[in-house]
Amino acid sequence: MNRFKRKINSHHRRKLVQISVVNARDLTPEHIGAWVAIQSANPALESPFFRPEFTMAVAQSAENIFIGILHDTGGNAAGFFPFELVRPGFGRNLEMCDHQGVIAPATLEWDARDLLRGCGLNVWEFDHLISGQQSFRRFHMHTADSPVMNLADGYDAYTALLSDDGKRQLTKVATSARKVERELGSLRFVLHTEDAAVMQKMHEWRARKYGALPARSHTALETLRAIKAEGFAGVLSALYAGDTLIAVHFGIRSRTVWHWWFPTYNPELPSRYAPGMLLLLNMARSAPGLGAQTIDLGKGVADYKVKFRTGALTVASGSVDVPVLANLPRIVRRNTLNFIRNTPALVYLARRAKKIFKPQPSAD
Image (cartoon, rainbow, N blue to C red; front, top):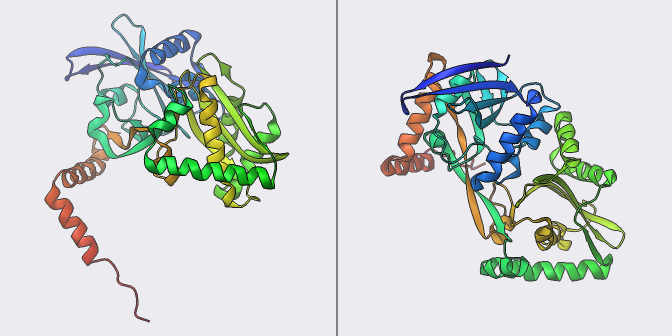
């Protein structure tokens, strides 16, 4: 996709919007400066996934990462829309990106389909779209919580906010910590290490459980690990018991948000040691030292996320489809599902039908 500009006449706003598209590798210092200024000024975009460093790291090993740039009436960059071009006309969210959306001031008005047209897209699929961007809401298919730990007032204030289940879990983790120290040695938490061998252990342990990451993901993570900017950094944390490495976490942070991203645990150790919980709570104690006011645990309903959360962000999955003939089946399907979801009687009938026609176990 070559660099180009399109002017979109939005019937919703009745004003002219100009959009240009550049490969993420071709972002200029002026682009990056404008991006950082916009991201820093909008609290809804505080996640490190909205920083330009993340997009540029992903683009280092992928030629198909593009940025739609929204321009104001003076031609200045007023917003940025990262996407991966899967094939002509078809885009999706960036790989490994746990928060997605347009990096723009909350006051900037834009239309989702106009944005896609300006980027030369007919479809854009997303799976962790922040729910607050109004122009995308009609395209949400599902929403889910991304639990967070609020550490703005320190660790003790955080624990006071926990539910009763969360406080009971803290007691269990304290018991596990004593057990680990009796049997393996004193616990030692390293907030950030430059040791490449620790990063390699993270990859090895993760691969044993989930399979190896693609080569392009390895490249992106190594790039992120090396970044130490004022408002963005890769953070490689390690937890030891005596001389034994028991858990590793690699994540990224912005000025105030630390994202729980790649936690891994020594597979040779018994689960009763709860190395993951020990790692997370040590991170929580250390977060204020990083300037982090929040640890974002990421989308999911894992038991520990439910117990240790003190709040949640909402993220959505779905797709924006420009009304062209090729997209007609997708649009009809989405509209039908949305109609069913918003009609309680139909939801009830669908659930009843699922129960009635569910295959019964064989009597053999």
